[in-house]
Length: 176
Image (cartoon, rainbow, N blue to C red):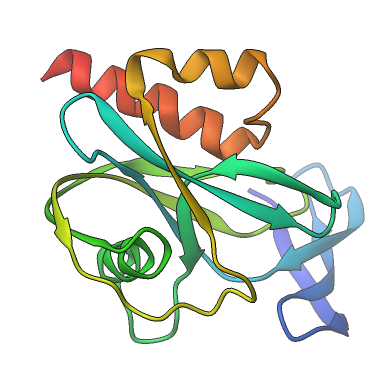
């Protein structure tokens, strides 16, 4: 396992930081990497009923476009991934869940991005709305879970985390 021999923060925004880390490998080789740290998050695949999931249409500034996605948000200090999942569900689609199953934890771009996403499947929903931190109202779109691949094929779902989450939910439900 490489040994960290030093690190320094080279940039801090209100959302993430960029660090330069120095590593020494078992071979004696040394390398410097830039990594981004923003904090772990939670993502939820919410089932309104046994056949219907709830997507949200949300603006993504880095791509300058709206995309269909799932409830998600950063895990704040002192909160668990499960608490964050329920809170995001209430804020973004207006429901809470009696049943919350953990589907796993995944990373994206782990060579550069330190963050992890905790993924949950939410069922037995009941109305429960909390005020969220979004700058505009999110559009909630119910959709047949059996047909989610159509949305991927049409390019309406593009985010790798969302696509992964849907397939992990499908596999989880097939095994139940």
